[in-house]
View 1: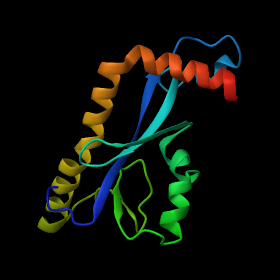
View 2 (view 1 turned 90 degrees about the vertical axis):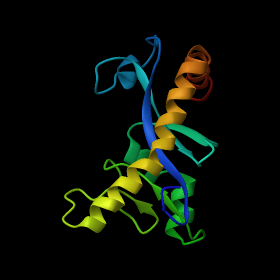
View 3 (view 1 turned 180 degrees about the vertical axis):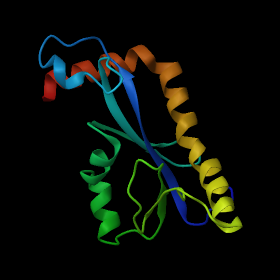
Length: 144
């Protein structure tokens, strides 16, 4: 997509609002001051992928089993992430201050390709809002 070779997917996080839990309520108050779960997803061009929940985007990625596979060079492909993620040999982020036409083109291609994760979150939230919230409340109380 958009001239980005060897990119298998995009990664990002989103906040899923939840009903205030009766226990450990403070854990679920996000930076925007409402109760939520921070959900990270990685998806491909067809918006297929997986979801994981934790604290912040970078922390989730660092503690994900996929991170270990990339770090150990078990896969030879790239993921695209926004500027909230650290630049790694397998995780490409936008150029912060592009100073050449090449860097500006890279940022345009990066943004265009990474847009798939934003569309996936929009679809997920609009179609399954109540199911997602109930699923995560159930998950929390079963596995905390």
